[in-house]
Image (cartoon, rainbow, N blue to C red):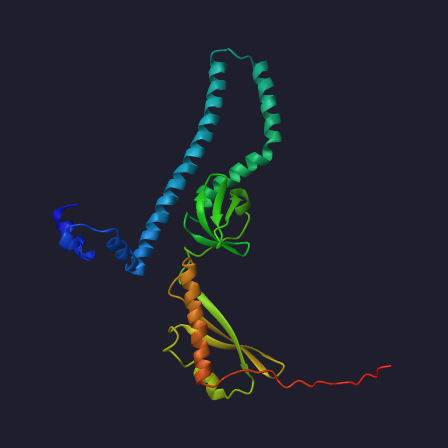
Amino acid sequence: MIKEEVDLVFPLFDGAAETGKITRKAFTEWVVSLPKHFVKVYTSRKALAHSLNDTKTAVKQLNKLVTAILMVVTLVIWLLLLEVATTKVLLFFSTQMVALAFIIRNTCKNLFESIIFVFVMHPYDVGDRFVVDGVPMLVEEMNLLSTVFLKLDNEKVYYPNAVLATKPISNSFRSSDMSETVEFSIAFSTPISKKESLTQNPHHWSPIHTVVVKEIENMNKMKMALYSNHTITFQEYSERNIRRSEQALAIKKILDDLHIDYSLLPQHVHLTKSDKN
């Protein structure tokens, strides 16, 4: 670093300007105090670096495969030009190759589908969070034939790319700001004025939100739902859960302030006396 950069960086760390050294404690405190968007940028850059590395690995694997095929074709042409191999010999080897191709046809099919999936479709990169078969996972490593994922509990899952090519994939990272739905029930006898006040609270919700009545059940309960938009995608899974919890608690507070609740109707209980012998 040049002197001008040092003069700008040292004041960021506690005590570094006076001592001329950055201690481990000062560095740790600085990292913890970083704004969230700085951490997000660092995480994105790290994921991009891993993605580029895995892409290079897949390209190298494909390059080795193509090189092997070209070497075989070149060898056959060279033998023909030098008249080393006769037509009968080539016909014999061709028959054997066709038989081998018939045996490994499924492997060849999976290889072709994996190449199309990785290089043409390319539905995700390393670090993307997506949902497949209803399970949210994080992409950890991409190879030519398979992809390694991490579940929420850090369990590693290996998926063949040929299998993934046949499944619908929901990519949270490539999505725009996503919406959230919170359902709750209130008593059917709740006054209309209180119900309307639920939709007239811009202080608590973003400008784009909707509170709707989904259904009336047994003439004593109204099922309602709040549809609101996040300013993030579900790529940030923990942040999404925190915001969802805060949203649910905010709904509870509003319902408490308006004295809106729900309780079961009184139930009739019939008691019968049994005669004991």
